[in-house]
Length: 620
Image 1 (spheres, rainbow, N blue to C red):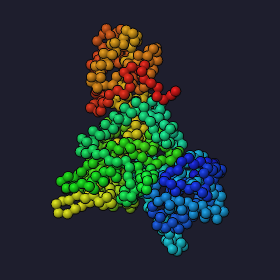
Image 2: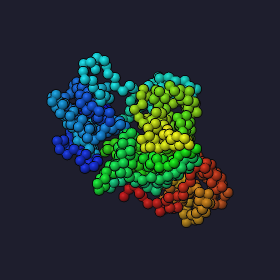
Image 3: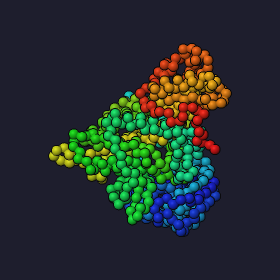
């Protein structure tokens, strides 16, 4: 069980919608809304290990609750079910029982309890007091010795904490916190978040949430479930270009695209059981007499394909890839955050079956390098985190050093005492947002369970074997990539997206639309022939207002066209990246844009050629 304590000026909640199939949500014996003043709010996640001994976990949790309430000198406690402190959740019946039993025991001990109901989406507001003990966390083990006194004297250990290091490309390794003195600002932020549990600018909304709406890219749809987005033409172009980029990257690497269902029958036990291994909270619902699930990612479908294949050792490594455009995560109200945490998202997902751990390690290394390449193409800084069990590290210490050397930058190293995930080693990459918080994007990991669980085998001509399988997303969720890009712009003196992702790459502003428009039309024709996105601001506005519009739209190249441009050989091009105006021929302008793009995907323009025909999608 995971517990997060917040010493609160107040906690207020109200239920909104049921969060699962009929019968999951509590409807009796708990309030559907409530408020408590000057209390300790306890966010509670019940884990799968807890199911082995509910008595033990309840008693141990009660001890922790009493201890913290005593430290905070309060008898008023809010018990709040919160399925987001762990990736290894207990079943809903067990979690519900634990909450009910904790409430009963604490009330019997004299505490004033407000318990939020299980199985509901809830809007909540919490005000943290902000003193050194106002935020505490605890991990409560599920087990309990028969003799409590003996267990206490022997100091029955909880799950050992990870060991955190930073390794440099030359192989030097030191304690992660100590390394903050010698690494860059982004890695310092990553260490503070991952290792020290320091949340920067807590409670503040990251800059991209305003930017995505202000720039007419993405917005919330009030007619949909909270956290679901609608994409306007400018944002959809960026999203589509990113998807095409990742598709090309993976196919060039050897990934074979497939497409699988988004809906699964939970009667298929291997799927239902496997879901928990990924810490996934799926949308589940009833369909006739069958319990159905909308998938979290493409894992299940790709595993199903691999299970049904005849795989020879000569086929390995076998890379199956899907751009999963309908993936879901059941985030609760108050948790969704723009493009960083959302309920429906786009996930590039590749699974690689390998012959052996040796081949799996080699694939892990190469796929990590490919993920880091995306940071160059996107003009983003990614900080690597290499996570592995102690056994894996001790067996592969030299290999880890080689990986860090090839990544070419200091890397956060997490050494986990014992494996309690389905993976033995993984590499994550995080961008740091404008508030100093990580946005984890690309990831690759070695899965040591799924092949056996899904009965995936390859044959060497004599025997059959379960292959180690890698899970890989070279970019992470597409929406999170855009979040990272927008967060990056928030720290720029002159914000802009990379030219290949800019919805408009070149804009022409005719001084007098009546006499200069035809010349602009010809320039746009030439650029479009070269697959450059260009448009014309022909609105009946002053030149100054139209220049301001180009600046607001983050257009990387814009040109004011007057008599001089028509009569001369060159045109005055305003280059946003340089904050400068330079004279170029139309051909030189075309080459400048193509040099910026450098072979990356070029989508056609999604909005009309004339800005006067651009509708306003973001306001009435």
